[in-house]
Image (cartoon, rainbow, N blue to C red):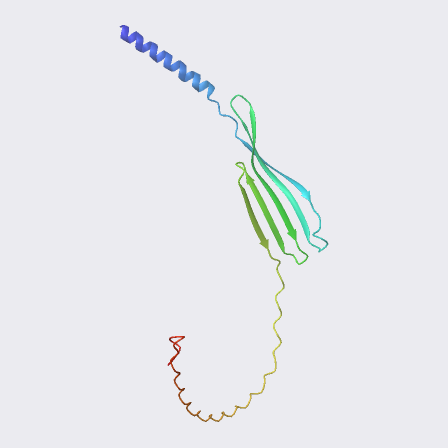
Length: 161
């Protein structure tokens, strides 16, 4: 009897804690990610006709915990410099700084579509050149006489005959 009473009490206490956990286990709202872009400057590149556009994109995430407190964290910052030349070529330098402070730089090149070159005009064919006459064979050179042997030199061994 005592044992049944203790078992019943344990079941009641266990169900109360489960009910309390079920009531407080509300799902917090999903995090909100926001990207803001600001234009820093748009000067010309030393009067060469190229335009330079500098922008900064900041990605932040706002989360709300179960108590309603909002926390905003900066996920990454991208500094983008875009250079467009008068010929239509475009170069982008993207410097990305993540939340840990790691910096990654990438460079992208977009080349302008150039019109295809026209086909070369057909040239008039050159007349065939007459074959060159064969060169006459050179006479054989006479054999050179052997060099005389040098006498031994005691002051410099190995340099003599």
